[in-house]
Length: 203
Image 1 (tube, rainbow, N blue to C red):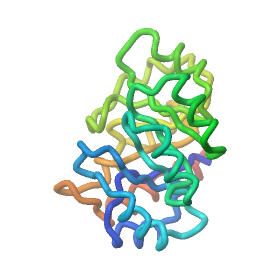
Image 2 (image 1 turned 60 degrees about the horizontal axis):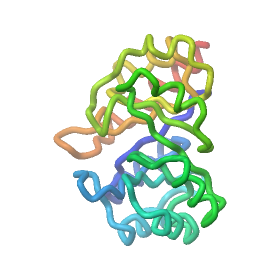
Image 3 (image 1 turned 135 degrees about the vertical axis):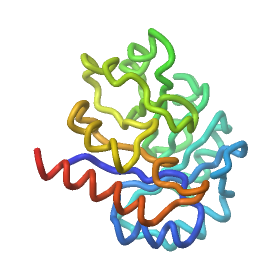
């Protein structure tokens, strides 16, 4: 089964919709430059309303390991997703501070990116077209890639089934593709989840 991450949730109604749809993950964005940014305090309030079966992922861009670990160890988030220039030394430092899972994101914009992703010590990796670009990358680049991964970048209810058929990712991660005018759209969230579950049922 393809896992689903609905990312960039920021309002109580977003959580309510997620609880009804039951994706495996939701995401809180802690990168201050993002329009989807939520404060740790807001994330804690939203997490308290989240169905316990859904894991909350915190998305960070070059945050200090200490702050990432604090949010993990206090239960505000369950998993950290590193979306900046964090390297193996950073991951090692984070491992010293917490035993919670780590996802490392890689932008598909360099020839050696898949080699680096294959060797990464994070618990999981995410392959993206860019930092919230809303654009897909050339999926053919993954033809011979063997490590399990989260697929992100330009996914939406109309193309997610094709992505699953072509690539068989472990999980799909969607943010802008389930928004209308910069806000999460409950109808699009539902369409996305239904498209994934339907495609899984066809396999």
